[in-house]
Image (cartoon, rainbow, N blue to C red):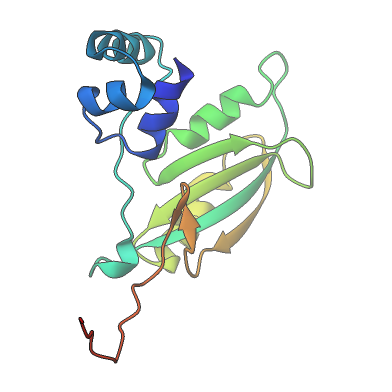
Length: 160
């Protein structure tokens, strides 16, 4: 039934009927599987991927490397929980190696807003020993989708 998950991951707007056809299952099997995946938190939610550069909304995205001291008996989890509960944090990942422990993705209206979040809320957290902020200048691909502008052709189409 992982095939259903793969179909939904590519496009969550497919109807149960369309998924059933693509997966070679009955509509009822698809509905039962989706309900089960939602109850088990395998399907954690449904989102829409928006290319904000093509809208009038100004947003800034930053990738922040966070170095932390793990807590005795808790490891990194308790510190990560405090960090990912901030509304500015869009994603938080524990990393396996390198000079930092967490990667935190933050969004704000301006670079200054993100910088103020990092200096005023993130960096001052107990057990945070350092941060490095990297601002995203342009998104080329996100969640498997390529953000490419459609090229306008200067030539006129001719049909024969």
